[in-house]
Image (tube, rainbow, N blue to C red; front, side):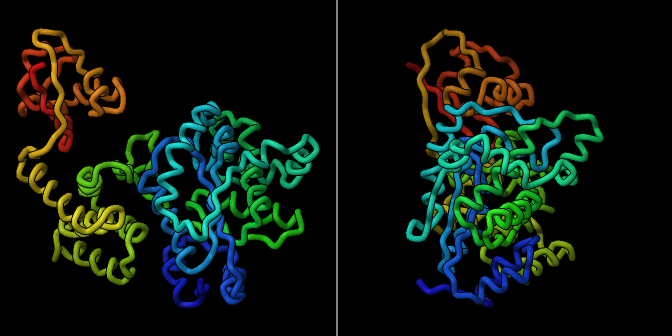
Length: 400
């Protein structure tokens, strides 16, 4: 495969917040070398969000330009927990849960990336085998003062929030990953810059040419304020139904859609800026551009026909308040008590019983457009009716 350089790499350069050092990056592009581009992801959840997908797209772009994508599954580092941007120590995840999460995300990731120039490895293959002497050597590569220069650590220290010694090892492990895979470039979110730069220093200490650190903006979640995260429940899953992905994109605050355009589409930045100017000048409704965004993302994840159908479904259900023609169905016995939180969770209308209770309390659960505020209900009151959760989830309830 031809290795592209120069202007074709503009897509990545324009979208990157940091390329450090820029001089080394330019030299790599001129070298005609097939670069090894590293991205590490910790399988802390079993799904892939649009936030993850945005960074995976950038890794795929390097593949498109002829380079090798090295995807590191952080099955070892996930047990430590990345402290980047965190205000408290992360809960330690059980190894069996990490294994389950890996099995969930791996097929999704393989579908996103080009298999012809892809290496997928797990860092437990080398980090779990480090001897005490090797761990001591790795720990000597940095100082406590350097660690405390990190904004997240220094803030936690000033606020008297505890910092586990184990957390100091996370950036060291991440840096050692770059040694293990011989990374030329490492990419990540903006919150990863400190870790990526430490990786350069660790590579130097092992007499390797240091990697280029390249970071990109973090997508804000559907709440419009915090980084997209499964733990915060402000995420859009790329494995969701197309109409749900489209609907959730339509629900994001107007101010954050421009970053979505930049990170999740192939539009020129000048065209995106033109869209933004139209909205700021009140010459176009942001709703229209959000529809373009939803269509582009669903088309990339599925196809253009599916995107058109998702758009029609959104207009039919959300705008025109019509029910979908096709919806899942379930049958219930007559005159039995139904515990709604459990019923919603079992039928995949909520992620958990606690989330179901919150939805009921918020008035987001309806039967034939009438709000249900009780957690327990007799089946006779819901049989032969349609249960609705939020704007886009429906369930037809029949008599058994």
